[in-house]
Image 1 (cartoon, rainbow, N blue to C red):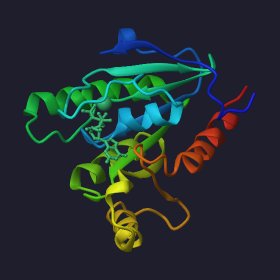
Image 2: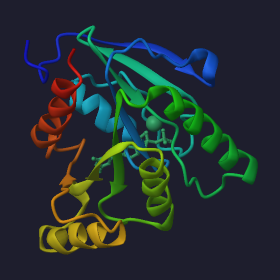
Image 3: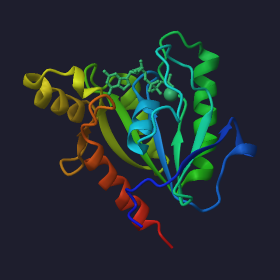
Image 4: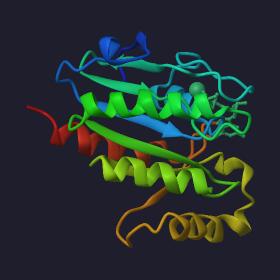
Length: 201
Ligand code: GTP
Ligand code: MG
């Protein structure tokens, strides 16, 4: 079966801490990014399911780690968003705790897809998040979201700015995507498929 054909996708559970995290050896593709950057929307679009993960225009809604089982073989994981402007210090700590605990269990079966808003560009929070994942040994693929909102004349400059801000090495791509138009799904799927193939046992 091709890794990129989605025959089944189902919500499995919301996890808030060590006791509920899943680590059954299935590979995990983890979607991380600022609150409202479009994680849930991208996950839905990739899976071709309109409303599997909950999309909200109110930032900071997803507090838990949400697991979706795809083709019975691997998980798509929707992480809680960080960098929510109105978040209290306690809420920020809570994010770090949940994600720290999550990564402690998920690595090395996980591949992180870090979402950066294509129009806003990479913020300080995104730089911190990338560092956070890298320091913990996660392999990260960066995507620029909501590209349907970026005028075509500004695309190249926006993508280059994101790459610079995140100090990405020349050979690692920033994949432009849009959950709205479907742009970039093929390219992102092929990245994801590489990970899934590599972790096949
Ligand atoms: P949290 O769960 O709060 O962390 O947010 P999230 O990152 O899961 O974002 P979500 O997918 O809920 O989307 C946030 C808002 O952005 C919603 O209003 C979406 O409709 C909108 N949005 C998401 N993806 C796109 C996109 O590709 N293009 C456009 N124009 N809007 C998008
Ligand atoms: Mg969400």
